[in-house]
Length: 376
Image 1 (cartoon, rainbow, N blue to C red):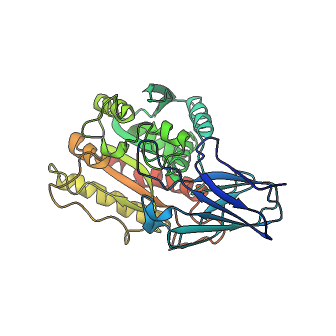
Image 2: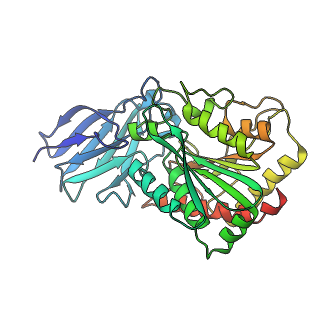
Image 3: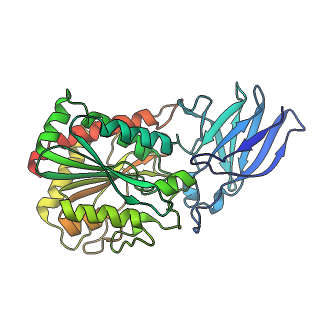
């Protein structure tokens, strides 16, 4: 058999520059394709075929020009032969080149920046949730590529809670988080879910960027737009995803919101808030800080040492959703970040930060919210 590398599938992204199988160590040079109409790139996802029992060196050559080159040192790629279990690969970075060394047992091995969350799995999640008691599903509209933008709603309480993920489609841990949170909220025997559904109505967008997800983008939609820079003035021409979601938020109001993401460089889980908004109220900030403290106490995977600096007073970027929601609705809003790298406080040499840990964090975030939902 000969070595084959392909990415013509859901969320696939790689370009093959060369393949050399003339020595005992097979070697391929590759590069990541940029998002359409954009300079952003960092997400990769491809299949290696025909290499059972062979040592293979995969070199991604254009990492120096990627969106977040500081994310590569200390990073390890994920590999899977069953597409369910994604393990850390032997990975090194030097001089703008990421080298991944594998020795597959079988003739098909998948390699990715992080464990993918496919659009098929997204549709399965939405279909399953929509059939659960007390859950309704609505299509807010269509994306520029004609994909549905799904909203799930559940709960009977007066507090309006919004959860939304994957504005940046390559941050797939965000939808793994969503799966964990949704499963917990749909469990009618779970006391946390029962309390939350009694006190609040949840509006959930599991995937804000279906087009970028399917295309294998890191950060943008079908026309190269970063959705998390559109919240001050979205349009149906550039950012229908934000336009449609914000319109629904205007209809329902927002008391509490979590925007779920992944961070390339910081090896930990953290939250970013809205400290720089012009209308900041002491009680609004106090509730945000209370949620941070509750999650810190509940989840060993969460930490407060590492994170982003707060915006100075009055200098928040209202094109970003967390600041826009805090300013527009007076919401207790936040951005949750999970790592692409391993988690430094609790490292896992086999899986690193993983889908399972993302899902557990989603469950823990709901439990922390249950402890303060009556205070919103």
